[in-house]
Image 1: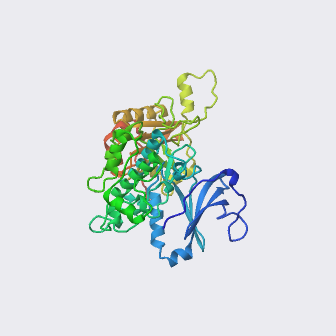
Image 2 (image 1 turned 90 degrees about the horizontal axis):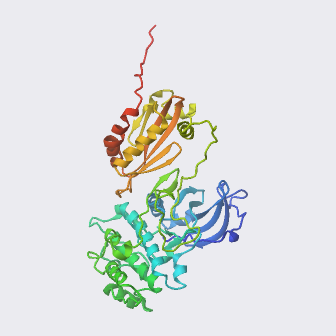
Image 3 (image 1 turned 60 degrees about the vertical axis):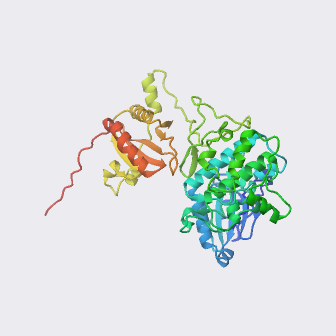
Length: 485
């Protein structure tokens, strides 16, 4: 079931005041619904304003009765699970799912820039611009494949562009997960859009989801560069014949490297078709390519490569005066005014004053009033006490990160250690929060924010714990007493 495209509209087109069908009030008590963005058989998509944050979102409303009659309950559940699994800066985000007696609502990221298709419809793109979109598409598709998700309907109509000119993959209605493969390790469902579908799907003999997505990416790249389809024909039978044979001609303005890449992408033999890792090593693709690294915290995506004057600024193939390429910067922080008599060390300590733990914080850390929770160690979270200055703790974390080539990001008494190795679940990211327990003692909380749990455990045991051992305050043993009558 293809979802209506979550396309964009101007804020001037936003119509305030559309209420839910229940009479009075905002939709779900939170959303002021505006213009209809798109409609399909089972769903409609609206732009809406979250009255709590005043931010625009896209709301996909699905009719429960139609879903039940169409036998699509499992399909909807799978789509929700997939969208939660593939949270990436170049994929449209699903924020939350809510329901009433008659409707299911997907609250999604609102992408203002519209479909990439509308840009291509005006004519072919510059090579640098097409390359940038293609790089972002491959980054998103690689992320999906690493998590066992295969889109199976990639096309310019399902690629949106945000305010920053960055790509957003949408419409996972036809996507599949690895668990759906048959015993032969292949998918067998015939789906996709004819002009973008791979020859092995047309053959109905079973196909590799990753190879099918790569083929579609190849068709998209050709369209971006040429302004028309590689296998276009008025007769769909003739078009299918061209797809089967892989017959297409590149325009004269295509560079040699681009032609070479396209022939590898549009290889009719899925066994010899180029793979995602090989695409990322291709000379045409690599020009100006920049890996995007990120983590998720507080239900928000944050980029690893935040704007930082000490870092090299990202190069753009399509510069804009106010363009921002990666979100999640935490560089802004307030600076308290300090007496002029403060020494440099005192000034730094004042800036590094950690937030104090309240009684409620302590109880939330602990089981009831058992303070042993302050020294808790679980699979992906560790806490310990320290009497060392906050600056010394942060310095030690930076030293540990340097040894293993992790990047360090800081905001006040929060530290993120960010790895560079691309595992199946993305780079390992570790968050360290420091809280004041008493004026002379702090609680240090270490937790995994992203990445593989086993890799996190290995890093903690081999690097983090040995490196921080000298900073840990060994608390006296807890003595449990019993009273007798």
